[in-house]
Amino acid sequence: MKEISIKKLRKLPEDSYKLIDVRDEALAAYGMLPGAIRIDMDKLEKKENAAIKKIPQDKKLILYCQIGQKTKEAEDLLALEGREYYGLKGGYMAYLQDELEHFKKGEKQQKAEESIRKKYHKQLFSRFAKACKTYKLINPGDKIAVCISGGKDSMLMAKLFQEIQKHRQIPFEVTFLVMDPGYNKENRALIESNAKALGIPITIFESDIFDSVDNIEKSPCYICARMRRGFLYSKAKELGCNKIALGHHYDDVIETILMGMLQGGQIQTMMPKLHSTNFEGMELIRPMYFIRESDICAWRDYNELHFLQCACHFTETCTTCHTDGTTSSKRLETKKLIEKLKKTNPFVESNIFRSVENVQLNTIIEYKKDGVRHNFLDEY
Image (tube, rainbow, N blue to C red; front, top):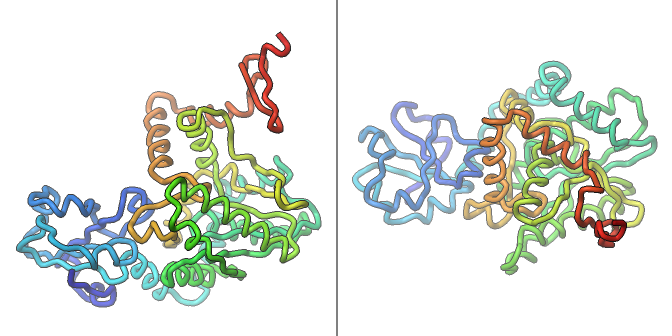
């Protein structure tokens, strides 16, 4: 497919072309180019497509995927026969990099920090501080490795740690830790650019995790997540840290609870903190435990920020995984189920969360603690 660069695209009159996002639903839901519509690539390989028919013949069609590879290799798109169309060189990632170049030095950092203190103080900082206090996540003398994946959650977490340090209520240190498990150059460049624009002094170290899991057929996302966690613990300990902080939020927690029941046949949750079983003296904390994903997205969009979602090798073919090893399709399915349940029960989200706070053991048939199974008949 012929390609057009983002620089040339910006020079075209806006009414002369139509953008078409051919990434999967999970990636597109995370962020699209302004004015774009999403159409699956396989639907463009068929002769008829209703969405394409609605676009005037005189408009150029600009297709984009995540990094430009999928559109570059695309052939025989029957729905586009007779139309002038191009693939966006570098894809969505090229657009994000170009966006960052349009802002003055320090402009994004100042606006992002001010919005945390004012516009989104209650939704973000107050809930961050509440989780830290409720679950005693930060103690005097702590040195915390704030683990940054490059996504919206971990980037916001880094800014919230910077903000809470300014309050000087508890003396502690932070290291903003980024692991490069084998990113392509576009993904790594985006993480570095965002960190620089937001004033986050990151420490980057490299690993070969992506290469290691490339040939694993069964549960590659789960294995990748476990390996990443181990590398982060190891590096954090090497740097003198006693804790690592991950950016899981309230929605991650309730989705995990529901997925455990529906997909795994078990009741469990993401704990706000836990001791490492393999790295003595190390602890994992989740200070964004009370923060809603919708508020993170609102903060991101208000500040015109564009972050990485998933950067594994599978992303290059436009699929994603989650940082806890679950596939995005299952998480998205669970997210949609919760939204559907909310229509008839507006309290469903808080009820799911509270369900793991209000466990009545005398009504449980069996439960496990420290690997030991207990049955109600033991004390019946």
